Image (cartoon, rainbow over all chains, first blue to last red; front, side):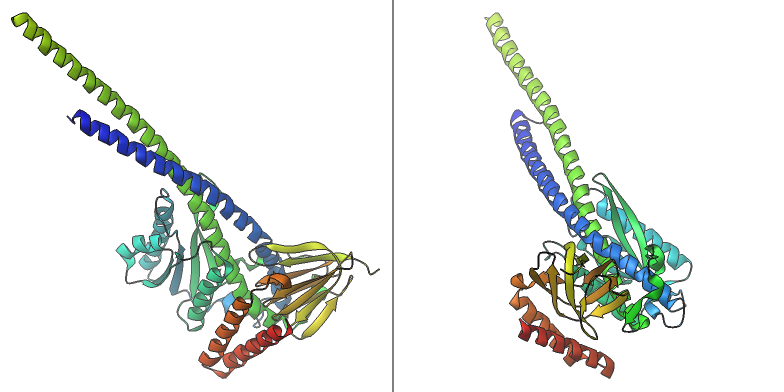
Amino acid sequence: MASLKDLRNRIASVKATQKITKAMQMVAAAKLRRAQEAAEAARPYSQRMGAVLANIAQAVGGGGEAPALMTGTGKDDVHLLVVCTAERGLCGGFNSQIARFARDHARKLIASGKTVKIICVGKKGFDILRRDYASLIIERVDLREAKQVGFVHADAIAKKVIGLFNEGGFDVCTLFYSEFKSVISQVPTAQQIIPAAAVAEGEPESAGSAVYEYEPEPGEILSDLIPRNISVQVFRALLENAAGEMGAKMSAMDNATRNAGDMINKLTMSYNRQRQAQITKELIEIISGAEAL
Amino acid sequence: MAEAFKFELVSPERLLVSEEVQSVVIPGAEGEMTVLANHAPVMTTIKPGVVTVKTVTGADERYVVFGGFADILPSGCTLLAESAVPVASIDREDLARRIQDAREDAADAKDDETKTRAEAFLNQLTTLEAAL
């Protein structure tokens, strides 16, 4: 049994921890709002990009003009997984959820005889995946320096991926990130970005899509547009991740604060009990001493 | 007064402009073009340069864009810029850094095609710097 002094120290330290988790929760809440705003601000661009892409893909058709980034290499042997996680922990199961999802995917691919390569974005995913697939990780992107994810970061990642594709490094590229549903729910998501399967996602604007003039040729625009679209997809994933991380952190810290509160209650209870026991013991000693006389 | 139409300037980070305007001058890949209301549908890539927007009140607003796309319809014009900033708040250091990057790209280029492209991009950037 811990002594009274020990208990007092425990209570003090748990209280300090509670203050920290409380502060972290509030910081996460503030950052979450900012991350959400950023995600919302980025939405118009990706929406319009989708519409433009759908329009132009329609114009080019499935013909040989379409760039390889869109049609793929025609093979399905080497898979590249881009796993986006957070840079920091203390956000509940957020990172491990994404990593587990990616790992399951990788395991399935390996079981069916495919080659898998992994690019880790964010430190946490790297730490987790390193345990099982250290030899498959070809690159890790560190965003720790970035205060807020900007398009430049996404662009750099996308350029790397495209460069690798052009060298024939892989056939299919899938992006793993956590979709931000709400503060308490983030869903790990896999999205195939090369070949661009979801090109037809946006509704083509029926008005005048047939009579578009292209400057330069549609194929040329498309070959410029597709890489850009990949950057946009990566950017969107990073933003969703940032918002999801903060949401997860907020609820994790909320839980931690509540747990600390419970713990303080329990410790205070046993502290009081023990103090009372000691007082009683001392009284008995005094009384029995007096009676002996 | 010229007829107004809807113009939107979007960068990946945010929606910069979304309003009714009289005309827009776009630095298209194959030369500058002025877009007025009821323009024929055109889709074009844009090179780094200055977009001049004439609002309904007649005021000129200028934005620096670094590459992107323009989607022009009779009903409106959408400009998807890779990065866009109002001319007033352009960061010269940032521009200098981009030029530096482009220069390195041009120097690093392995085959002729990428080299030509990198050099063209570098040219556009230096022209842009001179224009500001």
